[in-house]
Length: 409
Image (cartoon, rainbow, N blue to C red; front, side, top):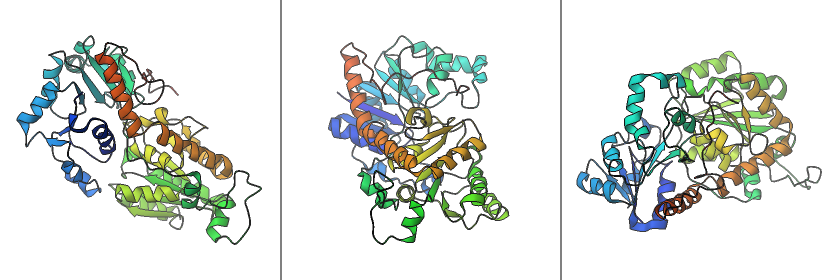
């Protein structure tokens, strides 16, 4: 079986999945990059090393070879590439194609009433509803958008982004987070000499992470407000770690000065993906504050994989797929700072529950929502389709995507 993935460029969110496919398929797997990576991404620490991987081809360097692969592969995985003409050429020949898409109407489903927009979506999607065309939904609200245009009926499957998955034992995670003094029962935590940080953690203090670009849709200002409210009752028992930079950086630092929280918030600036993970590994809680314009939110995967108890806005695409409220994290309603703060306070006040949610979060990524499992399930489903049997997974990647309205809790 030959599989080709076409997208604008390969990045650290796609490489683990592509590596997993290459491990399973060898030279029968290819990734076609249609454009060079933008300078902004490179300056954010995104590496161009992916272009050197053995399965990566660049359309702008080997167009004839890439076109041949797009048309002749057994299945095409079609992300956003800027080359819709190539995807439609394949679809028009009735060849098995799986689109990977984030939301159509992030800014509001009212846009679906536009006649011009509907005609455009008909050309790209709806007219292929009875063709061997499937949709991999990179976000929990994607299916709702495509349901509005009556595309891919019964053929929409859960998908997402799969950053690097790291593996730890429970004790390794506790040591990274300074929690190695804990046993399964809080009242039996051993004896001996412990550092001040160990004792602070045992008494309920913790480190809180936030990571991303400092832009309005990600609401980094919520963390400054959070620092202000927590300092009133938790001063000396928490610290907020903010990895990132962007247009709001000076505004955030000025706000931290105004609220007198500079002593409890650390700004790290832009970090490499590895640097962000190191911060997450040391932290106990990760707060994810993005609004409805966040298609997925791969930092949620990374924070969960790092054993953090994640407090996340339900508006981002990854959250309903990855988090079960109260089991492996906590979800708060749309743009509701008070509910977000309430969830963080609960985790501060209940360290045992916090640790359990962090461990459950880790297991969700290590056991289900990871590149290796996603690749295996994708190839299993594709093979079934080729034999005439469409067999979605029972849960996780490649399970049927429910139509979840972005306006519903």
